[in-house]
Every structure is written in structure tokens, then in C-alpha cells.
Image (cartoon, rainbow, N blue to C red; front, side, top):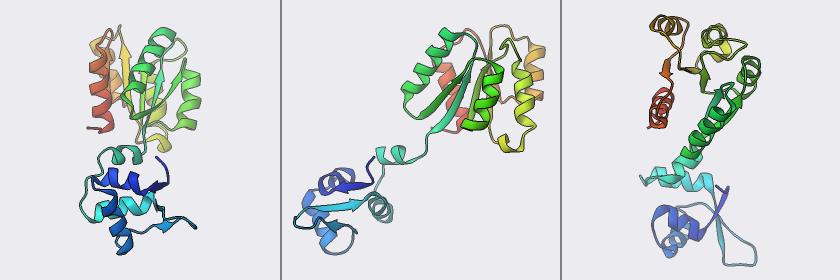
Length: 191
């Protein structure tokens, strides 16, 4: 979204005519400016958002574009699965996605990327999901991060251990992508 909008863009966002936006501007209700030597007007996005909120206008798609995207770090040593998960979650259009292929890379990216949600395989080869959860939960900087573990070989005892170590939820492989989506949205508090 641009930082400065045209009269037509404001009219479309507010679901009114261009003439109405011009009247708002001329009466001083909506702050903007004229382009020197032209009759065209421009409106800073912040002013338009404030005006819409003040007048009870729904922000709709604009609200989604303005809100910071939730960050997800996907961790799996299965390259094909990692690609499928990344494409699927990226396709939802509301997440910023990063990937890691092992526990070491996950540790580095967790601290640099600062994800809201860590989605990882239980057995990464060099470390387990339980060990990652313990490491994340021991760091005050990462306290608010949600953790979702995936596994095809997770026993009930291992699942209980994961929950004790601070994992927020888990999925048993194979799973439907819709089940992953639902868990991700729930853990991130996105509706």
C-alpha cells in the first residue's frame, strides 16, 4: 500500500464518489494537499485511516494490508515437505514465511527472524522438537513464540513430554493442509 493516495483511491477505499472526497478536502475534514500547478490532490495514508476510523468507516482490506504480517518459521529436514508447507502457508497471503532445514539453522533464524510461530518436525536429525521447545522456552526474548510440532512417529508419551516442555500443539503426519491451516490460525489468534 502506498503512503500517499490519490482522490480516486480514497474514494474507492471509502466507497464514495470522487466529488465527495473533494468536498471533504475543501471543508477541511480530510487533510491532504494539492499538487503545485495542478488541480490534483493527494492524501497521506495515515490521514485517510484516521479519517475512516473517526467516521466509523470499515477499513476492510486496508486493515489487513496495514497490520503487520505474522511471522512463521518452518523447520523440517524433508526438503519436499518444506516446500509444500511454505507454498501453502504463503498462499494464504497473511504470513511472512522463513524456512530452516535443521536444528542449528532453526536456532539462528529463530533469533534473527523472531517468528510468532515455530512449526517444526519432531525429529530433525541433529535435534528433536522437544529440545528445540526447551531451548525456546528458556529464553526470555522468545517467551511469546508459539510452537507447533509435526511428527509421523509421535507416541502419546512423547506428545505429553512435548506439552510439558512448552510445545503449544502438535500434528500427526500425515495431515490435511486444512488441519495445519486451522492450527496455525488458532495459535496465532488470527480469524
